Image (tube, rainbow, N blue to C red):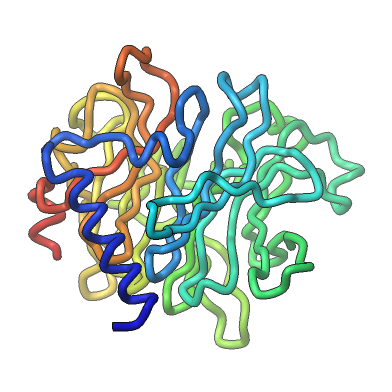
Length: 315
């Protein structure tokens, strides 16, 4: 057995041990990832599950301290302590994910852009890529294909307008992400920028119903095969707050999203869900209370897929 495969097997076993004793979700390695008193968002996994990248604040509440890009590596002792990834500014980072070949990190970043310096901008999140194979690489904003739009002028203080976030790329090269736009379908929508035959992406468009609705549709993650989507809705019924749903692509069409049920969702907010690379664990973000901590602190949680009937049937 190769060293990488051995590590992956150990990781899978450790994940299963962590959640095997409870049908309800538990926090995802809170001590190792130093989650206490810090906003921590769902990580992006490497293809073999041995590396995670995630956004984490330096304290709480979020508006009093920066939210940084961090990395953790699986070792024989478990997950390493968070490793800060240095960027040129301390502006907020959100929702990193890895490309299918693990060579590129894609994330949302609120750093000022030279192209926008003459615009009236408050805080603007755009999607960036970072070449992980080049130790001297710096983040590059995704240009073209109507993917990034500046949050400026009359839109600069309106909810989440023109903040692009929660991006990930499938094996086919399609880019999924979330944003709010005046020409969108609802209050907040999930977009796709399909891979262009000439490289890059075709123009980003909102997904049609039943994925997007007149309300808030967000928290998107799509698996590498591009045929399973996890997303969140606050207004389609369920346990309350924002609930996590799943949809499958059948004959080229996304099916009506199905609520994951009370073994995942709660009266609080759940979103930013994704599956572990081996498909056995659901990892997500929630502001639910825990261990004497009042609701409101975003933490990463994990649930066993075998305890989630809807997902278990799809495996």
